[in-house]
Image (cartoon, helix red, strand yellow):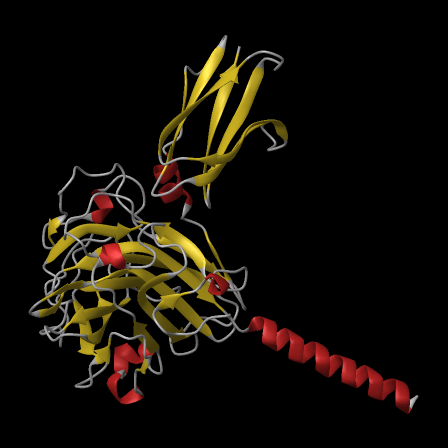
Length: 393
């Protein structure tokens, strides 16, 4: 009996150790997105930026999020502006935590105490989420040097901001910096112990993820924050996030934000003056929802950005003879699967399966040998998909 108990105990310990190992997200905070980090227990794609750019050869590519039992992780694929006078602009990530009152949707962000000298100073835009805390990275006008900034909004009219890295700049080579508890006090305590890293590129077009719109490998801003410090319940909850590119003091926004604008703006169009910008008036929801569990998360709101990238249309609809399926392949040749399904999602016919070149593509859907009725057309381009309902008469 004793021997059986011992073996059972060993088995239980081994299972516990295995579970613990599985619970740790496969992520290294170094400002670099690796393919091994984009996994079921690692980074999940939140959205991509595929619109024309407002700040030239700098800006955002994609946004990812992950969670394990201990931390939340965020990766903002993108590159700040680099020129002869140093590093310019900022990347900002706004967060709405469950159970924490933030600035109501459509209400101007207040100018926080301590915001002078940070990218939150001029950031008074109206957001499409009730942000209560945010983190940013900002060039400090010196080559390869950056500062990490945080802000916490304690009411619709007040907030506290600080340079979380103090007088010690963050380097651009991916070396992680840890936010000391002394720099994250009071309302900013959610950032205590956070790890932040940024890997720079000469410009956005030389970022390894540029050609793939932020797929691995990519360089950018990477952040790990403690779930406990952030006040996230052990069981989890819904967290909303929104990333954007801003200027040095936060007063002038570029077009680059994720989830991105819908419809896509004209080339060179900026959101512009932060004081006048109201993301709540932009069609769609300019925030992504993360359903955080005890050990992981699921992204709810990345489908709209995917659908915008695929640009799927089916016409005429209804169709009596044949319909044309139009879609788009961005950036590089990619594998395309087009499936006709019934309304329960069961495959009826594979219409396309293979590599397709960059550009707008079309495919004819013939009524021949297909019973009249309503169907779903699903187009999968790489890791992005879009679905449309079609009626065949």
